[in-house]
Each structure stands twice: as structure tokens, then as C-alpha cells.
Length: 232
Length: 232
DNA sequence: ATTTGTGAAAAGCTTCACAGCG
DNA sequence: CGCTGTGAAGCTTTTCACAAAT
Image (cartoon, rainbow over all chains, first blue to last red; front, side, top):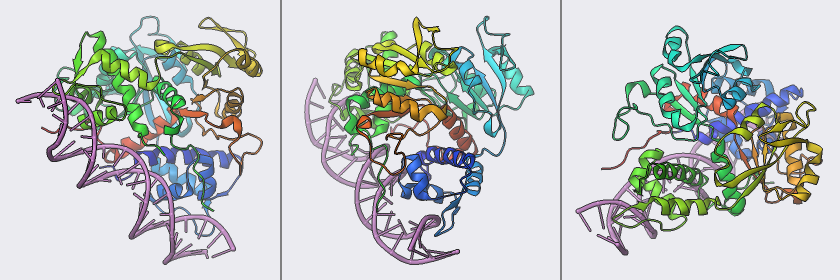
């Protein structure tokens, strides 16, 4: 199914960030070797990752920073705007809303939701927090592409279901729990319901990262080398 | 090098979370099939992942929830305490410090650091925020196992260096940048300095997750199936 | 001379079928 | 009879060597 490795997409995001940084420093050319060193991977890997999507370089010369950057922006789908709602406006949701960098590439927060009376009605980043029950009405009136899920884990499945029912195409799940792609009523043995068809879930789980870190501190030899060497 | 797949460790963390949840519901037995369904992987995968570390089940019977939980806790190194410092106490650092769930398994925040005069001296979760310059003195007086890095990306490499110099064994990096395992002075062509030897870095990057999500919304067929089916 | 792009080999990970045990 | 544990097969991803291009 996945003819392009998932890991390749993560690396593309890293290469793009490096290109942005090079552009800010007015560096106009780079190479697979230079990118590899900065990204902590091999030059083979960089070239293979780019080759999945096209031919962006010049043999003998390398890559032109603005061109490769533009191409990666296009490949990753960052040359369009994305309307985002955040569900869960506790400390984490607020930190996400205020984190700089999301507004690069036109990710725009268009709605903020919570259930807590203390939060509903508050202003965060110039937006009023609404009650989660108004989400489906909101999505009927506004195009929403993604939902960021920053609720406690016990509420995550229901909130994810609400987002799926509301027609979002993707969920960025910050809760430390697995989101099941199925209707809440028939969780168990089930088909994937229509609302879920095609909803993509990506997880950002800090507690899991913390536990993986603990494991690898105790078992450093099981960690794959962070910065592979280049051949001569 | 990595005889146990990195992905297996992530899944182990998921299985453990499922076992905790089952224990709270007073479920005493489970099976590779049940765990697989809840984790969104195959039963083969569950059994293989567990087999890397031992034999924890009973043939014909399945797994006893408290026993398997205890074994995974041990495997992951969660049966000891971990002293953690957070570097960067802006909104994200504060959200991390206050996020529930880290204090399970005795992850303990012992020090909080920042450079900003408005933050230094403030109390967060009962701890005073100290200036980053006092980090090395702090680590001389207190055993610190991990550092959580929640500074802006342009300060991440220096802060990571400070943590490595201070002798932490692992860094959980929340900044959207690659941490280079090398001394800051000779970044470029380099050896890995002694301070870095064995320092593990795990990344938790929400902006990268957001961009991957954008890509997979536009290219859903490239996403590997989220909930593999079981064979009859 | 240098650096990309790529088919093929190697390594790594997942799936499978069934042996092994209760 | 049921479910785990596991060697081997199958598939995916990474590494490699080198042809192609400038």
C-alpha cells in the first residue's frame, strides 16, 4: 500500500525546514551531502527521498535552495491554506494555539472548542472559545480541514468521533490514546463507518516520547545511530 | 544495530497504556487478539513485539493483565524514578510541566530553567524557575536523568549542548529542529564529543506532525492502513 | 571533476503458518 | 481445543555502486 515510506515524509519535512533556514542565511545552493549532514541522515537517503517525487537537482551542481524549497512545499501540500479547529482549550490547547510557526504556510485556526464553562467564552489568540456542542453547526457554516485534539485521553475517542462526523479530513491527536476509526456505538467488532472513511490520524504523544526516552537511556545500543556517517 | 525495531518500542508503550486501562476496568485477562484490536495492529505483531523481551503469556489462555503490565513496566524502565529538568518555560514548557500523567511512574520535575527575566523567579507547579546559566551548578548538586527542551528552535542546539555538558542521559526535544550530537564550536565536520557520547534524543514535533497530516490528507493512499484486519 | 538519479543488493521489519504447551 | 511463541517467508526500506549529466 505505502509505496513511499512514511519515514520519508517525516524526513521531507526536515529537509524543508533546513532549506528555510538556509534561505534565511542567504545560502542559495546546497547538496545531498550538505542536507544529509544537517538532517542527520545519509546523502543516499536524501537523494532517494527526493527521487520519490521528482528530479529537483542538477548533476555536478547540487540543488538550488529556493527551487528545492518550492518543490517540497508543493509536494507536502503547504502551498494552500488549511483551516484548523482545536478541540480542547486547556493549557495544552492554549499552548498549541499560541505556538509560533503554525501560521507559516497558512495553517489558520478558525475555531476553538471546549466543554468547560470556565473556558467557553474566553478569548484565545483573538478567537472566542465555543462549546463543543456547537462544532457540527460550525463546520456546516465554515470549511474545516483539520482538527487538533487536545482533550484528556478519556474524552479523546468521543471528540475524535465528533470531528469525523463534522467532516474534517484529518486529526492531529495529542491525547495519549489510540483513536479507533469507527463509530462509537459499535466499538468492538465493526466496520469502519462512512464518516471515518478517509479521515487521517497523526499522533503527537509527549508521554509516549518520554517513555521511549527512558527505554533508550537504559538500552542505548538498541537506538539506531542518530547521525550516520558518509562514505568517503 | 537495532535488533529490536524502534517501532516495537512505541507499540510497547501503547500496549502498556491499554493494560493500565484494562486494569482500571478490573479486566484481569487479555489476549494478543484483544490487545491488537485496541492498539490498531495485528495479533502477530503483538506477539512478536512481546517475544523480543520474553514469554509473558500462557498458551491456550492468553495474558494476565497485571503480570503483563508489570513486565512491560520493567522492560520500559518505568520501575525506577527519573529526575527531569525542563529548559524553556514559556507557554509550551508550562503546559508540559502541568500535563497530568508524567508523575505516573515517577517522572519527577526537579528543575525548571529559562533565560527570560519575566519567567525566572516565577513559580510553576511548586518549583521556582531558575536562570539557564545555573543549570550546570544545579546538575552538579542534583542527579538529573533527562532534559525536556521547550525553547525556540534557534536556541535549541545551544540548550541541548548545555544539557549534554551537564551530563543528562537523554533529551526530549520539542523544538522543530534537528539536534546535532556534537560540540557547538566545531559544528561542521566533526567528531562526536565526549559529552555527547550516549546522550539519547527523542523528538516530539507538533509542527512536523501537522505537515505530515497535510500531506496524508492530500495523499491518503500513501498512508499505511491504520487498523489492519485480523485473519479468521 | 563533481554530484545527481536509480536499479540492484542488503538489511530490516512484518506477516505468516504451525509447532508447542496448557 | 485455544492461544502463545517462533523460525521462515515475504515485503518494505535503506544502502550501495555507478551511469548520467553538466
